[in-house]
Amino acid sequence: MDYDAWFRAAVQRVRAEGRYRVFANLAREVGAYPRARMRTAAGPRDVVIWCSNDYLGMGHHSAVLDAGCAALRAHGAGAGGTRNISGTTHLHVRLERALAELHGKPAALLMSSGYVANEAAISTIARLLPDCLILSDANNHASMIAGIRASGCEKQIFRHNDPAHLERLLAAQPASRAKLVAFEGVYSMDGDFGRAAEICTIARRHGALTYLDEVHAVGMYGPQGGGIAERDGLTDQVDVVQGTLGKALGAAGGYVAGPAAMIDALRSHAPGFIFTTSLPPATVAAALAAVEILRGPEGQALRARHQERAASLKSRLQGAGLPVIPSPSHIVPLLVGDPVRCRLLSDLLLERHGIYVQPINYPTVPRGTERLRLTPSPLHDDRLMDQLVAALVEVWQQLDLPERGSAWPSGGEPAHCLDRTVEGRLGIVDDAQHRLAGPGSIAGGDAVIDPGMQGKALLGRDQRAALQAEAHRQHRVDDRA
Ligand code: PLP
Image 1 (cartoon, rainbow, N blue to C red):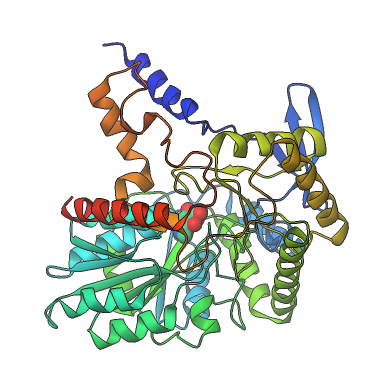
Image 2: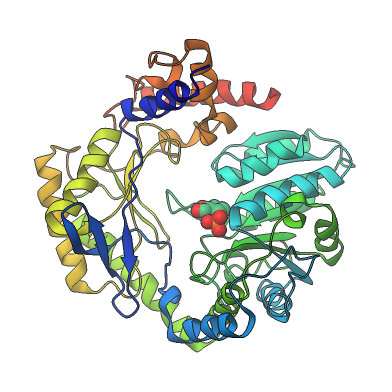
């Protein structure tokens, strides 16, 4: 068998859609962020980063670095084992205690990443309950979807941020059945908030557990940086909080916080926790320092500055007539609506203006909603923002991108939001369909750009209705999977 041919064909399918991924070879430099050095074939150059998830710059905070360096010197580069086999230090124990406290929960458990935390926790929680039904927001992250798949449990998908739909699905179930409602605090690609209060109320009414992914909210919302649940006074309402150490906390790793019995069960039943080397002590120490800083007055000041910077960037972009997707959070998405021009836009910003912002394409977002996702930090000043907006306006015109001043489709939900099958989100559909077409062919299934979507950044009502109908059909198929 020509194995390489299959892999080349898989890459070719991605290239054909204009969504081949090119990684920027970047070195952030402590003290210079958001500026960084980038290595290119022509030599190194300075760039400004506009798409980092080190939202508050904590990855370069001096106290965080000191804590990490001290732990590295004191305890070495790696943990040396799984948590059970010599991989638990006092730093791990302290960080778990701090995270439990941050979220107002009795216990917390560290994992290798936020992705692993979702995959391991959702699959294990649901598997340990009898005949558990998982109800998942249509826009949930791929890691939650992976957890749902791995559980092997029945699932139902409720329309994005639609508590009434969730309530209908729950009401159709026996009161005695185990149910887990999974959703997010901040949806990272559109920047909208989950409707946590309503979802929790409904879940309680129907005896369901709630599982909240706070990955894009930890450190950034709530008086102590506890996330959306803390901000909205819902700490007692949410049963399980999942988070990351890799975004606002500036390090790497993930965790879940929740009831003591559940966390204890995860320690002994979650393969994604048990069978892997625990986080390095330096990483744990750095994250612990970040949590402590963000819980105090410095954290409050950083959060206020962060929100101000995001609002300022949105209004500058809107003032320049660029199609900002309305977002109430710190995430500033700019709609392009075409994978090829989205890539080109990103390339030109980098080459001509030294501005680094990755294109966001399918499967991270649905086709037709390709975008730039800007993440201003407290360190992005007015001058950098003015440079960004001027560069965007220039390149936008050159590429003849969708009419400036256009708005995100009004009248409810963005059209793309329902294109959320498990397979679609994970990009698995392509591979399954391609298997039928055979290697070398790019004609099968998703390998060609959906002509109905290409270039249609802003969809009309009919197109939205057609897409929604298709998405519902896919969900039904998905539900049977
Ligand atoms: N959950 C959400 C909503 C995310 O956006 C991400 C990553 O971007 C994750 C989980 C995974 O977190 P991590 O990057 O720590 O693996």
